[in-house]
Image (cartoon, rainbow, N blue to C red; front, side, top):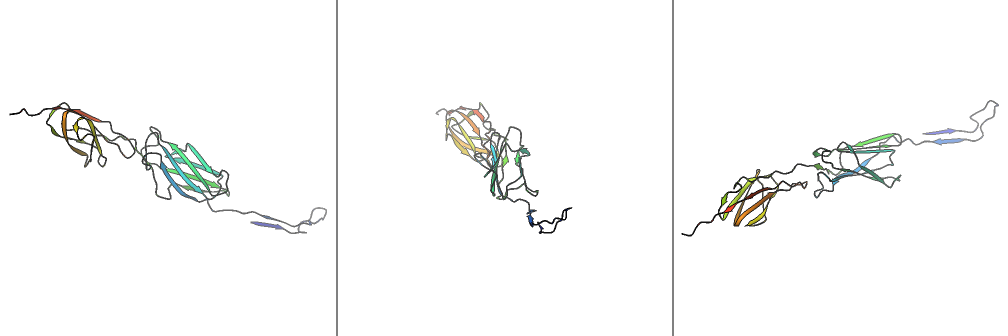
Length: 231
Protein backbone atom coordinates (compact mmCIF):
# COMPACT_ATOMS: atom_id res chain seq x y z
CA UNK A 1 0.00 0.00 0.00
CA UNK A 2 1.48 3.40 -1.00
CA UNK A 3 0.27 6.78 0.31
CA UNK A 4 1.62 9.93 -1.35
CA UNK A 5 1.21 13.50 -0.03
CA UNK A 6 2.34 15.98 -2.74
CA UNK A 7 3.64 19.51 -2.06
CA UNK A 8 1.02 22.26 -1.62
CA UNK A 9 -1.67 19.74 -0.84
CA UNK A 10 -2.15 20.68 2.81
CA UNK A 11 -2.89 24.10 4.32
CA UNK A 12 -2.77 25.00 7.97
CA UNK A 13 -4.98 27.59 9.72
CA UNK A 14 -2.49 30.33 8.78
CA UNK A 15 -2.90 29.37 5.09
CA UNK A 16 0.63 27.97 4.90
CA UNK A 17 1.00 25.17 2.38
CA UNK A 18 3.23 22.15 2.84
CA UNK A 19 6.36 22.57 0.76
CA UNK A 20 7.66 19.00 0.84
CA UNK A 21 6.04 15.98 -0.70
CA UNK A 22 6.13 12.67 1.16
CA UNK A 23 5.46 9.06 0.21
CA UNK A 24 4.71 6.23 2.64
CA UNK A 25 4.81 2.62 1.48
CA UNK A 26 3.61 -0.33 3.54
CA UNK A 27 3.89 -3.92 2.36
CA UNK A 28 1.10 -6.18 3.56
CA UNK A 29 1.76 -9.91 3.28
CA UNK A 30 -1.48 -11.86 3.38
CA UNK A 31 0.15 -15.17 2.52
CA UNK A 32 0.51 -17.65 5.40
CA UNK A 33 3.99 -18.97 6.18
CA UNK A 34 5.11 -22.20 4.56
CA UNK A 35 6.16 -25.06 6.84
CA UNK A 36 8.14 -27.61 4.84
CA UNK A 37 9.95 -29.96 4.94
CA UNK A 38 8.70 -31.64 8.13
CA UNK A 39 10.19 -34.86 9.53
CA UNK A 40 9.79 -36.82 12.76
CA UNK A 41 11.85 -39.64 14.32
CA UNK A 42 13.11 -40.96 17.63
CA UNK A 43 16.47 -41.97 19.08
CA UNK A 44 15.22 -45.54 19.49
CA UNK A 45 17.26 -48.28 17.80
CA UNK A 46 14.35 -48.23 15.32
CA UNK A 47 13.65 -44.51 14.64
CA UNK A 48 10.05 -45.27 13.66
CA UNK A 49 9.29 -46.50 17.19
CA UNK A 50 9.68 -45.12 20.70
CA UNK A 51 9.23 -46.38 24.23
CA UNK A 52 9.65 -44.97 27.74
CA UNK A 53 12.85 -42.93 27.99
CA UNK A 54 13.24 -42.31 24.25
CA UNK A 55 13.27 -38.81 22.75
CA UNK A 56 11.04 -37.87 19.81
CA UNK A 57 12.45 -35.18 17.51
CA UNK A 58 10.42 -33.05 15.10
CA UNK A 59 12.36 -30.97 12.54
CA UNK A 60 10.73 -28.41 10.23
CA UNK A 61 11.62 -25.42 8.08
CA UNK A 62 9.69 -22.11 7.98
CA UNK A 63 10.03 -19.67 5.08
CA UNK A 64 9.69 -16.60 7.31
CA UNK A 65 10.73 -15.45 10.76
CA UNK A 66 7.69 -16.26 12.93
CA UNK A 67 6.23 -13.96 15.54
CA UNK A 68 4.88 -16.99 17.41
CA UNK A 69 5.91 -20.63 17.06
CA UNK A 70 4.33 -23.43 19.10
CA UNK A 71 4.66 -27.21 18.89
CA UNK A 72 2.80 -30.08 20.53
CA UNK A 73 3.96 -33.69 20.24
CA UNK A 74 1.56 -36.39 21.32
CA UNK A 75 -0.79 -33.62 22.60
CA UNK A 76 1.95 -32.41 24.98
CA UNK A 77 3.92 -29.17 24.65
CA UNK A 78 7.40 -29.84 23.26
CA UNK A 79 10.10 -30.04 25.94
CA UNK A 80 12.48 -28.00 23.79
CA UNK A 81 12.04 -25.81 20.69
CA UNK A 82 15.03 -24.19 19.02
CA UNK A 83 15.19 -22.38 15.66
CA UNK A 84 18.26 -21.41 13.65
CA UNK A 85 19.35 -18.90 12.65
CA UNK A 86 17.78 -17.27 15.70
CA UNK A 87 15.93 -14.15 14.58
CA UNK A 88 16.47 -14.90 10.90
CA UNK A 89 17.02 -14.34 8.11
CA UNK A 90 14.55 -16.87 6.74
CA UNK A 91 14.30 -19.69 6.04
CA UNK A 92 14.78 -20.97 9.56
CA UNK A 93 15.05 -24.58 10.72
CA UNK A 94 13.31 -25.51 13.96
CA UNK A 95 13.88 -28.58 16.11
CA UNK A 96 11.35 -29.65 18.76
CA UNK A 97 11.84 -32.58 21.14
CA UNK A 98 9.77 -34.54 23.65
CA UNK A 99 10.89 -37.17 26.17
CA UNK A 100 8.55 -40.17 26.20
CA UNK A 101 7.27 -40.79 29.71
CA UNK A 102 6.03 -43.95 31.36
CA UNK A 103 2.38 -43.08 30.66
CA UNK A 104 2.18 -40.20 28.20
CA UNK A 105 2.03 -39.76 25.32
CA UNK A 106 -0.20 -42.82 24.95
CA UNK A 107 0.75 -45.85 22.86
CA UNK A 108 0.19 -45.56 19.12
CA UNK A 109 1.18 -43.30 16.25
CA UNK A 110 2.35 -39.96 17.71
CA UNK A 111 0.29 -36.94 16.55
CA UNK A 112 1.86 -33.50 16.45
CA UNK A 113 0.90 -29.93 15.63
CA UNK A 114 3.08 -27.05 14.47
CA UNK A 115 1.51 -23.57 14.57
CA UNK A 116 3.43 -20.63 13.16
CA UNK A 117 2.28 -17.01 13.03
CA UNK A 118 4.02 -14.48 10.78
CA UNK A 119 3.67 -10.69 10.54
CA UNK A 120 0.33 -9.70 9.10
CA UNK A 121 -0.72 -11.47 11.20
CA UNK A 122 -1.17 -14.69 9.23
CA UNK A 123 -0.77 -18.19 10.58
CA UNK A 124 -0.24 -21.74 9.36
CA UNK A 125 -0.77 -25.08 11.08
CA UNK A 126 0.79 -28.39 10.07
CA UNK A 127 -0.09 -31.82 11.48
CA UNK A 128 1.66 -34.12 8.98
CA UNK A 129 5.18 -34.78 7.75
CA UNK A 130 6.36 -34.02 4.24
CA UNK A 131 8.26 -37.29 3.84
CA UNK A 132 5.75 -39.75 5.30
CA UNK A 133 7.83 -40.30 8.45
CA UNK A 134 6.09 -41.22 11.70
CA UNK A 135 6.82 -42.47 15.21
CA UNK A 136 4.80 -45.13 17.03
CA UNK A 137 5.01 -45.37 20.81
CA UNK A 138 5.03 -48.98 22.00
CA UNK A 139 5.54 -49.77 25.69
CA UNK A 140 3.89 -53.20 25.52
CA UNK A 141 6.20 -56.13 26.20
CA UNK A 142 5.95 -59.23 24.02
CA UNK A 143 4.58 -62.24 25.87
CA UNK A 144 6.29 -65.61 25.48
CA UNK A 145 5.50 -68.93 27.21
CA UNK A 146 6.67 -72.56 27.27
CA UNK A 147 3.87 -75.05 26.73
CA UNK A 148 5.93 -78.23 26.30
CA UNK A 149 7.75 -79.89 27.97
CA UNK A 150 6.26 -78.80 31.28
CA UNK A 151 8.68 -77.50 33.86
CA UNK A 152 10.38 -80.26 35.87
CA UNK A 153 9.39 -83.08 33.52
CA UNK A 154 11.67 -85.80 32.19
CA UNK A 155 12.90 -85.69 28.61
CA UNK A 156 14.92 -87.78 26.21
CA UNK A 157 18.13 -86.67 24.58
CA UNK A 158 16.17 -85.28 21.65
CA UNK A 159 13.30 -83.05 22.67
CA UNK A 160 11.23 -80.23 21.15
CA UNK A 161 10.55 -77.02 23.03
CA UNK A 162 7.24 -75.39 22.06
CA UNK A 163 5.27 -72.40 23.28
CA UNK A 164 3.38 -69.21 22.46
CA UNK A 165 4.89 -65.93 21.31
CA UNK A 166 4.28 -62.68 19.43
CA UNK A 167 4.03 -63.41 15.72
CA UNK A 168 6.67 -61.97 13.44
CA UNK A 169 9.31 -61.58 16.15
CA UNK A 170 12.23 -64.01 16.52
CA UNK A 171 12.24 -66.27 19.58
CA UNK A 172 15.62 -66.58 21.33
CA UNK A 173 16.31 -69.67 23.45
CA UNK A 174 19.32 -69.83 25.75
CA UNK A 175 20.36 -71.68 28.91
CA UNK A 176 22.52 -74.68 29.66
CA UNK A 177 22.99 -78.39 28.88
CA UNK A 178 21.46 -78.39 25.41
CA UNK A 179 22.44 -77.68 21.83
CA UNK A 180 22.26 -75.56 19.79
CA UNK A 181 22.67 -72.94 22.51
CA UNK A 182 21.67 -70.19 22.04
CA UNK A 183 19.25 -70.75 19.18
CA UNK A 184 16.72 -68.53 17.41
CA UNK A 185 13.48 -69.73 15.82
CA UNK A 186 10.55 -67.99 14.16
CA UNK A 187 7.20 -67.23 15.74
CA UNK A 188 4.49 -68.19 13.28
CA UNK A 189 0.77 -67.82 14.02
CA UNK A 190 1.60 -67.16 17.67
CA UNK A 191 3.63 -70.33 18.29
CA UNK A 192 7.22 -71.55 18.07
CA UNK A 193 8.88 -74.96 17.93
CA UNK A 194 12.56 -75.64 18.56
CA UNK A 195 14.17 -79.13 18.24
CA UNK A 196 16.96 -79.40 20.83
CA UNK A 197 19.49 -81.97 21.98
CA UNK A 198 20.06 -82.41 25.72
CA UNK A 199 23.66 -82.79 26.92
CA UNK A 200 22.65 -83.04 30.58
CA UNK A 201 19.71 -81.76 32.60
CA UNK A 202 18.72 -78.73 30.50
CA UNK A 203 17.60 -75.34 31.74
CA UNK A 204 16.07 -73.03 29.15
CA UNK A 205 15.15 -69.34 28.98
CA UNK A 206 12.93 -68.11 26.15
CA UNK A 207 12.46 -64.44 25.25
CA UNK A 208 11.58 -61.99 22.46
CA UNK A 209 12.40 -58.36 21.66
CA UNK A 210 9.93 -56.23 19.69
CA UNK A 211 10.62 -53.45 17.17
CA UNK A 212 10.58 -50.78 19.89
CA UNK A 213 13.18 -52.67 21.92
CA UNK A 214 10.76 -53.98 24.55
CA UNK A 215 12.06 -57.30 25.93
CA UNK A 216 9.65 -60.04 27.02
CA UNK A 217 9.82 -61.43 30.54
CA UNK A 218 11.69 -64.70 29.98
CA UNK A 219 9.80 -67.97 30.15
CA UNK A 220 11.98 -70.57 31.88
CA UNK A 221 12.01 -74.31 32.35
CA UNK A 222 14.26 -77.02 33.80
CA UNK A 223 14.13 -80.68 32.77
CA UNK A 224 15.58 -84.04 33.79
CA UNK A 225 17.38 -86.01 31.10
CA UNK A 226 16.49 -89.69 31.11
CA UNK A 227 18.45 -91.99 28.82
CA UNK A 228 17.43 -95.57 28.01
CA UNK A 229 19.36 -98.30 29.90
CA UNK A 230 21.47 -100.59 27.71
CA UNK A 231 19.82 -103.94 26.95
